[in-house]
Image 1 (cartoon, rainbow, N blue to C red):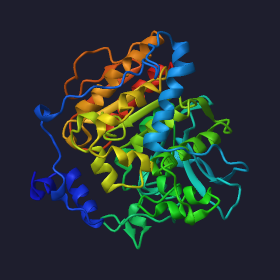
Image 2: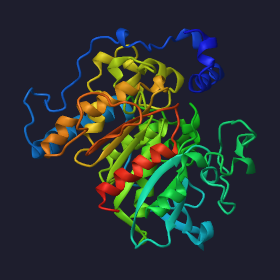
Image 3: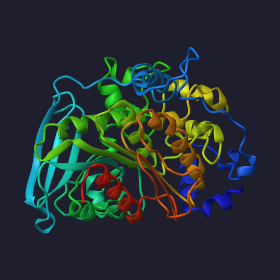
Length: 434
């Protein structure tokens, strides 16, 4: 595909701009979008232990199968993250019970990750429905341009963190401007969630680590290391995706303390790279009751062995900070990976999981995302739970699934009102809500 053809796509055009910024020629990588050119591959069986024995029940899966696969993903893909830091503190920065014309209580919580006010912190924004009976279930996710970008609410604090330059003057000198307020509100169905009885909580992913190759030096990976910015990472030490997932768990630590929120009914979700982080957070932290991946693609819900759209080598070249260093050894060698992404989805069992794709987002390999969800079904069957309930990939805008949900939305790489409607219905059904 020529560069001019790539630039006609809004998704791939952004990719070309990013690659040019880091000095990588778009012409150097030719993505495959032809199913006939997908190579033959053999997926690892999540129900076969390293000793060759087959797992036949949920107890054996939990005792042997799940820990073995989790260890492989940790060592070969995302990297090893620390646990909850000691001394973590929560501070309520603002609290307004009359937000959004009285529909919600808006809270802004600062999570001091080491307990020090001059140390790393998360600025957590949440809206809690006023009319719903407490405690309420929660949708928790990361945002791209600061908390103020998810809603035009003028009272939301504008983040002061480093931010990648955007368009429309929403970011100037790597800082968010007033123009960023509500910039991505279309990706956040705040009012719809509140009407359904859900709280929504979010924080800027740059609170944890700025999204560039040197971002770790001013993020938590340096702050929590004894050597700080002089740290030398081992091959299986955590990358940025694991750090962002770790941050979601720290937000969960707060949710457990808030009496307005039901920590037993928390949905962790994300779009694109945040969808990758949400899947990994849900795999590592079993406190999350439901996990949702929206257009997460390579390194998220899509099978790596298909080599369709974005590949392991391309993602490691464009974003060398996302995964652990050992993952780079599988550039162009996907068949040598000891795991594939269907097993990541299987790690979420028996909790419900939803995977969504877009029909024009070929870069994220919609079919590969569906197949990963499909091949996770055997683990859900160990619990007597139905998965997708279909054998073939459904048509556009035809949601399917039981404990594993899936839809292929018409459109491009985005999260839309249609996606949110499916997620709200899915969560409400599994939480026993109207």
